[in-house]
Structures are given as structure tokens and as C-alpha cells.
Image 1 (cartoon, helix red, strand yellow):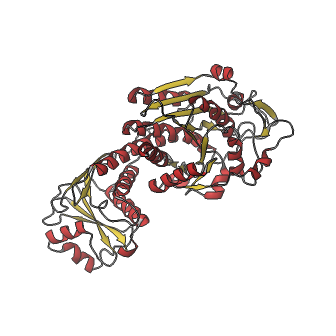
Image 2 (cartoon, rainbow, N blue to C red; image 1 turned 120 degrees about the vertical axis):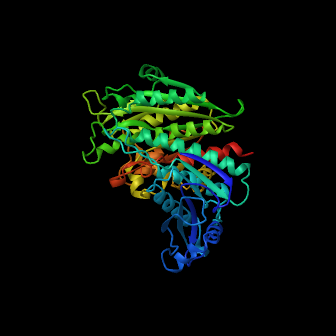
Image 3 (cartoon, rainbow, N blue to C red; image 1 turned 180 degrees about the vertical axis):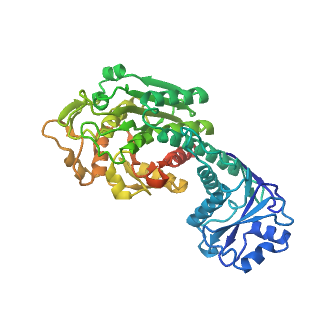
Length: 495
């Protein structure tokens, strides 16, 4: 999907469809007023007859409107003008693109991002318009024998009353890059485990590196063995697929500036190992690499943006399978850090690969490390499918990530990381055990990771509830690419 922004008049803009807003009670947006005047008040007549009530999320498609250059006119409900805020704006966008995708329009001109939204600036309105447009056109049916026809809608023009400035154009370009990063993350997440293997993820990283001039490095199991990554290697013992430790290095800032390291959990399939998961919905464990997918999508996006900062991706990737060689409950392994771990549950494997990746990340002398992982079902119970769980050893970093997530509408919630929880990881036979019991399961998982992050400021994003959807709308969401890209944009522009 292609995006552009320009100053234009809604009634004179040639396109497959022109989209304007109507507030509850019949009040027309400025662009709708211009259409209404040119069309001899046809819009206001329809509203007066009750064909359009302006309620949030409502939509009415009109064809062949006299004196209007566009082939169609789409009226979108904005709700009450006095209550028009972020939620109403986003609902209007979803309604608009939902209606557009049902037409044969190849292009559309939207006059919605020009609307004033409480506590949100123009850049936010532009970015959300692009992201929701891209989401509406996303399909993942390439593995079907007869894929559906591609959506007709290919070009979106954001119309505005005043000439867009450089900031507006930059917001459009950043949003388009973020949307492409989300598409990559969703494509990877939706692929089945027999295709998206650790080797496949490594190849994707190499492809991104080649296209965007990044440095890619892939460590094999023999390399990890030499480094003492016995915790990571304990997870992959039962799999025939060799594990990979993938790194991507983006150098957009001064060489003297310390990098931000993104660590993405890359379990390309998780059976639970010997602690086997129930069969129902186990297919969704192909999504256990969505942390890795979001990191790859973010790296592609920031490379396209050309952000002026240094970022390193570290992706530990393997499968967790039951096999005669697989780790058993009660086994004790030594991590790269030298700390020993008693494995009480082989299904708590994400933290076992992340802890070695977090130790490995220290060699880049990072300013900040953020790990992203579909880590615990407990986080889904705590926060549902709305907010990502956020843990950090520094409140300032937590606030930076929370702010980025709020602005990107990819929200997170700050969870406690108090020492009071650490004792749940005590082991009689090793330095720690890999689970802390049912109580506070997402918290104790974060506490486990915190033991490997003493040398730098660190945050952990538990995306188990937000990385994919189940049921009828099953599929990867591409989260938290918007949060991560916005955080990195903010860091690149900070003094």
C-alpha cells in the first residue's frame, strides 16, 4: 500500500473514493462541508432524513455524487463532537477502511487526519491512519492452493487544508516503515513451524542485513557451546533443528554512542518439551517466536527510517521438542553467566534461552537492553490481550517505554519487580530454579531474567497476550513493533 499527503480540496480531488467525517447530530467536518456545498447539500439532506446518524464507527457509502470529482463518497461517523478523542478517531478510521476494503476502489483520499483530536498531535493522527490502513489490507493466505484476490485498495492520500510541513511528511514515512515492519513480523509469526525454523529466521536476518546494509552474524551450536550457553542449549536438545544465535547490528549513530540492544525470543515451536503442553491449541505455539519477529520487523523499520542511533538485535532461536535427549524436570544446567539453574518445568524454556542471550548482550557494552518475549500465560491472565507486561530495573526506562507505547497506541503496563518475589525462585540444589510457582508467574519469570541483567539498564516486555489473536481472527498482530519503533524514534531525537 502506498501513502502520500498533500493539500487538496475534497470536492475537487479525483480518486476512487473520498472519505469525510460526520459528527453525531449532523455536524459536518470541514471537508464534508465543502463536499456538501459542491453537491447542492445532498449530504446534509441524507443526514436530515436519518440515513446517517454520525455515531462512532458508522459509515455510509454514496455513489455518483453530482459535482464531486471522486467516484464515491464515504461518510464516516465521528460520534459527539465534544467527546471526539483518540478512541473515537481510531474507531472512525477502522470503519472507514473496513468500508473501503469492500469496494473496488484502487485509491482513496481521506480527510480525517486533519481533524483535531484531544491531546494528540498531527503526527499521531497521520501515523495511526497509516497503521490502520495497512492493517485493513493485510492478508496471510499465500500458503493456500487458491489465495484470495489481493485487495483492490493500493493507494491512500491523506488530504489536508494546509500544506503539509516536513514533520508531517516525516511522520508519514515513519509510519509506512513501521507498517512494513509490522507486516514482516506478522508474516513470520503466521508461518508454520515446519517452514519458519531457526535457520529460516537466520536467513531472514541475513536478507534484512543485505538489503539495508546491516551486519548479520549467526552463531551455531558449537559456537554457543564454546561460550558456555548451556542454558540455551538445554532447550534445543530434543529438536532435530539446530539452534541459532542471530545478531543484527545497525550503526546509524556516532561510533562513540553505546547501542540499544533488542533481545527477541525466537522459539519457532514450543511443545513444552518433556513437560508437554495440552494438545488443544498447541498449534498456536508457532507464535512463540513473535518476540524475534518483532525485533526483526523493528530493525527493518528503523533501517528504512535511517534513525541516528546504534541498535543491535540479539535473537536466540530454537525449538523445544520432547525427545530421548531432551532436558528433564530436575536437570541442572550452567548458564553463560556461570549461574546454575534447576529446570523444574521444561515448558518454562523462554527464560532459559533469554538468560544466555542477555548475558551475551553485555559484550556490546549497551546503553539499554530490552527483551521481548511471549513468555508467560500468567501475563495473559493478569492483563488480557490489551496491554503488554512491562518490567524494568530502572523506572526512567519504564516511563520511556510506557510513553512510547501510549503514543503509538501499542500500550504496556508497568508491573512490579520487587525483591520480595525473588525468593520464589530459591532452589535446594542450584543457584535458582526456572519457575516460581503459580502465584505471580509473570513476575517471577521477570525476576529470573533480572538476575542476568545486573550490568546495564534493562526492560522486559511480556507479549504473550498481545503478540497474536486466537479464534476466528487467529493471527499475529505485529505488536510491539509500533512501541519499539516509537521508543527508538524518541531516543534518536532526544538531546
